[in-house]
Amino acid sequence: MPIRINLLAEAQAAEEMRRKDPVKRGIWIGSFCVAVVLLWILELQLDIGFSKSRYNAIEESWNGDKAKYDTVTNNMVKIAEANKKLAALNQLATNRFFWAPVLNALQQTVTDDIQVIRVTGEQKYIKEDPRVFGSGTSKITLPGAVIEKTSLFIEAKDYNPDAQNYDKFKEKLSSSGYFVKILGPRNGFVLDGTLSAPTVDPADPGRQFVTFRLAAHFQEVRHSE
Image (cartoon, rainbow, N blue to C red; front, top):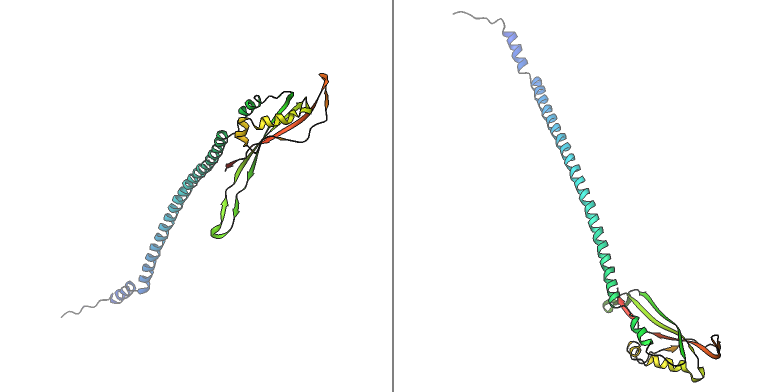
């Protein structure tokens, strides 16, 4: 029976040992894991870059929409304020005081020896802030308002003061149908101030007159805000 001798057995054994070396295998496995991790990190960086780009685009679009929204809301506030003022003006125009009937009533109250030299109308608007009365469950809030005060002043000359025509003129005005209606029976014309001293009329030195001033204060009108 032939005997076979393998002279390369030692070299083959050494080669086999190198192939089966766990350190080398560990290096290969470690390198593979590192490569996988690097690829994963690269993918994450790409995803982060894409996400940032998308975020920036969304933020830019949102900022543009927010600017438009702010513009629209500001315009709505301005429109609401304008509508409020317009409504107040319409209410004021509807409820405004008419002076034509006053002048018409004046020309129907002509009195002998009385010469009207000046008619003055005065209108004041006083803003009244909201007021609170009481507290707790009994608390009552009175809303603010604008109070309209209207007055009429008549300056005139009385060429016969001994007959007290100025008083007759005052009574005639106070009893006029229009002024009774608008002033009320208890709030007629009153003498504002005192009579002046008798004065010689420059146009007719033979006549003298006294000047006087009548006032009437119409009922206040409350315009709610």
